[in-house]
Image (cartoon, rainbow, N blue to C red; front, side, top):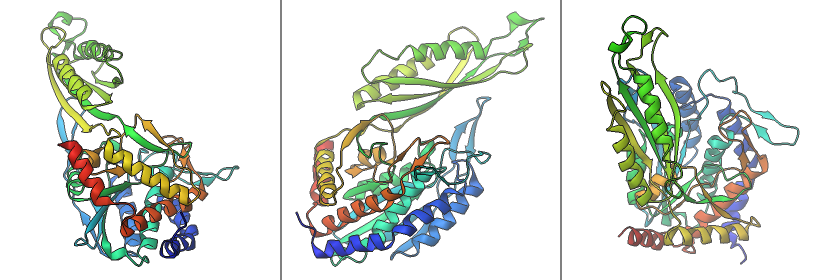
Length: 417
């Protein structure tokens, strides 16, 4: 099907911004914004805010609640968070689109990986460039171009850029749930899979922290008086690991055991930190119940246990609404000469949250690259314009009614019952 002239004008506007799509993402990626690097997050927030003001609509910072965490000694503590950035346009329009992304990365403030360089093959290697500062640039570029469309007034949109996606969105989850409930369709800008495919169904994810408390004692003079929390934590960790293979598609990853003190002291505290991935709601219920049963039974006397955490990302299956939306996106890609494929992913993102709130969404509309969460992370420069064109055409087709966002929302709500 030929691209209408009104849509082509929008695509031409994307092409006119091609160089800036890449250059501003490079600037952002050269600013470290690890999830717990407050000053770095604020620096990127200010840079994003400046770019957001190029768009029509309201630009505002949205305060987020402190994050509740478990320290290595088992204490429950609160960490402050930086604001989310929200951009809204035409909130009274008949169709409402939700676009989300995150400006935090996995790289801590002291990471030596902090500058974008060009590889010999032309790819750009840099921290958070693919995941997902490049995606944010693609998102904003698509919106800038879409604002030239003749039917733009039919579509209102809200952008939410959050500071905590890489740690499970504990602070921004309520904002995502609110947007998911009132929007018609969602677009999220995680990087595409390494071969350029988009994520289809996604597993759900839970993060748990199990604090184990024992009794300290001298390891030589009074060993019998102690109750070793680290030993207890190790036994519990083995029980958790044994859950692997018990149910199809369920994985339990014991990521870390912390605690203890000097070698001549019986440890009186420890924390087991672990992640669970599940394919569906039934598996999530099984994991949650089983983990709580294990946590409630200390492996020997004199220990107490306290379980913190749970599911932060519900599973995102390819239900009827997701399947229909994926087909519409594939058709837009075909019109652009971009073959679009969908593949299942064990990874999770804000798309899980939006889906759980009732919003059909595509969540890997960002750049094409790979090796994310490592110092080899890279993105292909040409993919910035390609993916901005894809999003821009999706928005054009929503405005013209070729993609019926309201019908997709109704189908999603029907599935939820």
